[in-house]
Image (tube, rainbow, N blue to C red; front, top):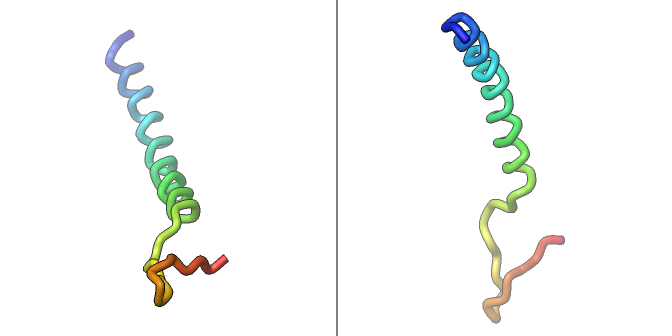
Length: 49
């Protein structure tokens, strides 16, 4: 395998990795609960659902 093929494979990997990172970040942002936790007067977590 010469350098031309290695460069081609590396280029394809980079081109595929960039959108994959943004897709993964969007997936995490939608799936992981975020924001401030709210508690009632007894100290129990208030669930919005």
